[in-house]
Length: 380
Image 1 (tube, rainbow, N blue to C red):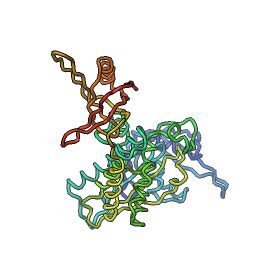
Image 2 (cartoon, helix red, strand yellow):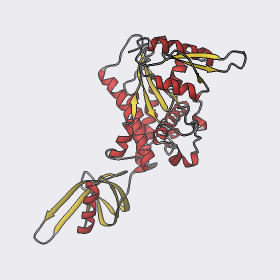
Image 3 (cartoon, helix red, strand yellow):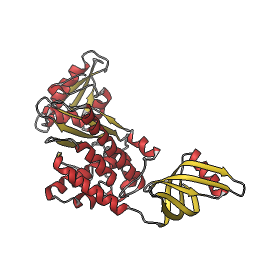
Image 4 (tube, rainbow, N blue to C red):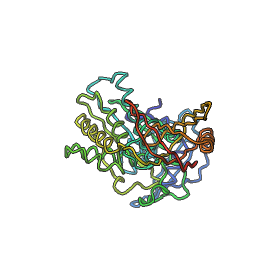
């Protein structure tokens, strides 16, 4: 680990990141005879001479990180911000960054089991938020997330950790944009903002709703805003992070990419702090959302991936059935005719979703789900 001031890890900071940040914030590269040094200037509105910072000409130089440390210190002074703030601004260039820190008592460290819960909870937050952004504002998803959702969640990567606490940051690269700033139109966010941004927006709004629920001691602050924040799955993920907390707290921070304007209500958000007293409110909200999401027997249209195909030849007939992993109900068994069974089989091998209508029934002690009188099967 390469450390700069305050023992912060500088190894993720690439030379291209520094150059892109300087260009995006108005610095201009000046001609300089020595190719081992890159010189940038910025007009000083209160002086005759411009501000000057330098970068090593090559990231492979042995003194790259010591020179980088000097440049970061200089930039922090020019921008009148702390060293850690300038570091985070550069790290969040073209990427959103969310951090979660479990504050520790003294020099105590969490157990392996506690650390695993903490990390798994964060992973589930990202996966469930991506699930909602991909498949709609459902109160509850049953079963496993689709492969496309899991693939989206893998685009979020671990960044540096912290001293004095157990935690980590998650980086979400947003890609390159033709314009230095894109204004997100909330009315059309699904077509304007990248999914990675929408995932973090949903998580932060859900955490803020949880914070308000604690202040008002009312879980409806969470469940009543599930369309913009936490559904039952996200409540469960946030609850996992808080379990076995004792008197400790989790602090969440977010730093938005300067390439993509954040929603107005989240552009300048303060640190979110959750303690164990949020646990029962998340449990209540999850229960309310699960109960209100319960599906009754009757006509339904199911959408999802085919996970199993069964073909049984009998003397008098052939029984063809599939198991569909519906996005809200989980696994449902469906009996099909030969034509629809063939279509479902092709969708299964091509990993495509299908939609099918029918009459939903529950059977047996386990309330196994069946869709009878299946019709209007379509490959999506």
